[in-house]
Image (cartoon, rainbow over all chains, first blue to last red; front, side, top):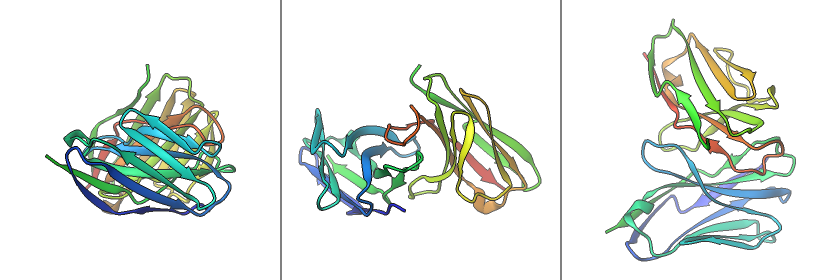
Length: 113
Length: 114
């Protein structure tokens, strides 16, 4: 099955700086890569996603890049704000996935005011 | 309506109790899921219903019993749970089959087994 690795596990950034979280995946057939943000005590929320036919996608201060050859994808947050502090999970779905998302272990992002 | 609604938000139950968790969505999504999440861990898939049929059971113990009465509702029946089953139980839905659609998660039921 698909194995998703996420690094680093914790990331502290100064407010206003950029944050980058990287994920690697094992199954070359995976074709959908969502990112979820989970604030303490709240539900995971889909913040951005990318499909395998696209290399980059942006939505205001967040962007995701995908390198299919290297089998990795990254989340970029620019001009970080305290409300960006949360756990971020990457995930991948194999083409044959039967709706099964393979989550990474999560990354705790702390934005220091 | 763009939400997945879960009830109750909190549940404390004894090891001999029977209780049910409920989940509802009105987005016309045809796939619904139960996930279990422990603190500081990613969600773990338990069950997938696709077009109201159980399509995935991730070897979940029989003390957890899912039910999908219709395309908008998903239940999780609990019986004879163990303290290690204490966790956040998340329901989610997505547009359809194939998995390459984003999930919408509910707020979860925080379950404590005593």
